[in-house]
Amino acid sequence: MIDEVRRDHTWDRFSRRKRLLELLSENSVAILATAPVKMMTDVVPYTYQQDADYLYITGSKQPGGLAVLSLEYGLCIFMPETSPHV
Image 1 (cartoon, helix red, strand yellow):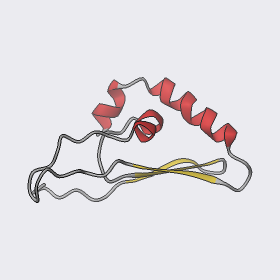
Image 2 (cartoon, helix red, strand yellow):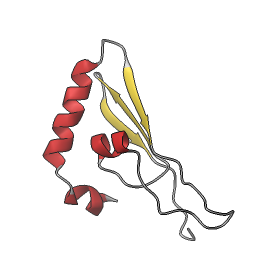
Image 3 (cartoon, helix red, strand yellow):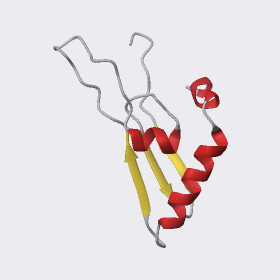
């Protein structure tokens, strides 16, 4: 995941997050979730496409994450543990 984030324009994402944080009022947070994985059948997934807002702010293409932004803490991303078998 780190390599995929580095390939994008890190400075652009930083300025996007800064602009979003400037819109927040005191003691508020912005929560962005990844797009769900959609399945064609019970075992065959569609090609994953990240939620545009989440991708725009975080640059992460991995499913299952949650981004929380606040004036006090900045950006905090929560990602599920990955299994070596998946």
